Amino acid sequence: MVHVVFVAPYLLRATLQFIDGAATLPGVRLILVTQDRLAGVPASVRANLFRFHRVENVMDETQLLAAIHELRAKVGPIHRLIGTLEDLQETLARVRQTLSIDGMDPITAGNFRQKSKMKEILRGNGIPCAKHCLATNRPQLDAFIDKVGYPLVAKPPAGAGSRATFQLNHAGDLDNLLSENSLSTGKPILFEEFIMGNEYTFESAWIEGRMKWHSITRYYPSPLEVLNNSWIQWCILLPREIDHPYFNDIREIAAKANQCLGIQNGFTHLEWFRRSDGSIAVSEVAARPPGGQLTSITGFAHQFNIHQEWARSVIFNQFAEPKRCYAAGAAFLRGQGKGRVAAVQGIKKIQEELGALIVEMKLPAIGQPPGGGYEGDGYILVRHPITAVVEKALSRIITSVRVVLD
Image (cartoon, rainbow, N blue to C red; front, side, top):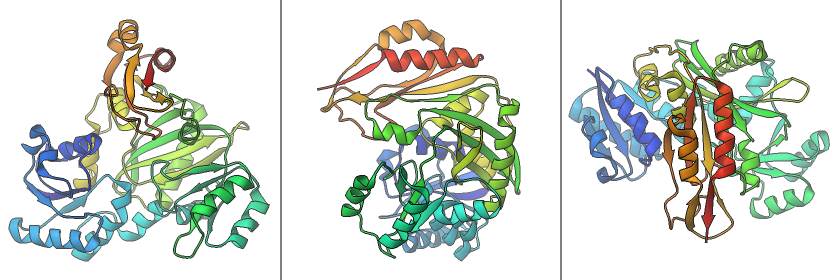
């Protein structure tokens, strides 16, 4: 049996799915290390755990090291140290290195996590990506703006999921940002040129440095546009057909991007743009499974346990390539205006219209405050063998369902 430690700060629903995927993998004894309470683990997941271990802060490398030492004394060798949270990847890599545990090393983790370093590596290998500046002072930033102009995108140097990401359309927007976030060597801000175009993702599974599988998904519209417009109910579309020549260039570019960043085993999530002139620009790459219900619709489209296959890739360096049987999509529900959720309108009509196309649904609870993020307050996932049917279903959902705030 292989002793595997899964590290997760908080036991969110999506995280629990990956925990259970690893815990139910044959040959694995899974130990969960978290700062949440055992009560946060559903009984169905708890039954599959080998051991539960709580620390005050799993992001603290010292505490995590101490936890692994303690677990080693109790259960014997720890063979793998894993986790899905992007913010944890460098910490996990350093602990692996310190304790001689196989897995992603600190250099590779830093290549994926530090966005400015990532773009330098990509551009140095001839991969098209947004021009950027990791600014520590105003003259440095002004010189960059003189070259690329507005609009700009500002984000943390090691952000994830569009958190703390802003579109700056003019100098006034920049002044507002810098009034609350001063530039310094200790707190730089990553600025990028704003890329116009259709935004996609490229998910891939890697075993021993070779890409074994990939998937392509389209955002409608981009997450940044959603963040800037609270009224938008947005969608993710995973088309059934991705072997079209239209995607030949991104297949080559994405494979090269992942290879030069150093991925060996596991999943990656790459975001990219197709400009109006047909050219490609890579936004960024993460050495983790995707979020935003993208993992779920990928599993539904391929009819496989994606959470377990991710675990297999990082624990046993194996991956069973699935067949893409369906198109799938996610429609995100967002409240309009201010206040708490008072009603969710149009659900009964959508259920009657779409019927079996709906494979999963999470509605906002009456009385809950709006989440404020780009994922909104709920979602509806759909699936069908024909891509156009899924596209039409997503359009019907976002134009028919309304989350009322009061």
